[in-house]
Length: 113
Length: 114
Image (cartoon, rainbow over all chains, first blue to last red; front, side, top):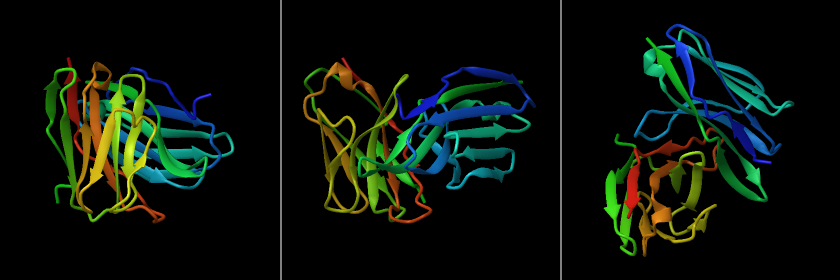
């Protein structure tokens, strides 16, 4: 079983739609939960960061963590064409005694004008 | 602040050639990382340096070497490039050991090995 599972998409939505992006994970040692946005031919940029279960909101973006179900989500409200990118979930914690980051494979999002 | 700067942005090599990818950060971070990104595989850690003077293997270190030249700079060397090393390479840095540690990436190097 992979440590992190993320649907690759692509996910196409009309402008203004609410977008839901999801990841599941299997490692209970993950302590920190992140979402990165990656535009084509660019490096990933940190979008959301949280370490507790529940919701964290930043503008149009909401990160949700459910540690009991090992499930994290990113919601984008009023989606814009400029949100078209690949979204990577990421986790930080200890695996086999080693402190590390683990990334999902990314979900490609297209917001249609 | 420039953040994490990588050079070159693009490179084409022939099998067996060598090259060094350069990375520098100006955020006074102690930890630096090299990742490769391949379609369907996500970001995979090649090597990392937890602090100046130390380096450790990541998930996919074979065929690569690294040097932590000083606190700011961390280079990745391919001694004898192979087609399997065709990928996009990202350098990253963080201020590790803090609760709010966050990972910042450079803009990447697109490498093709023919």
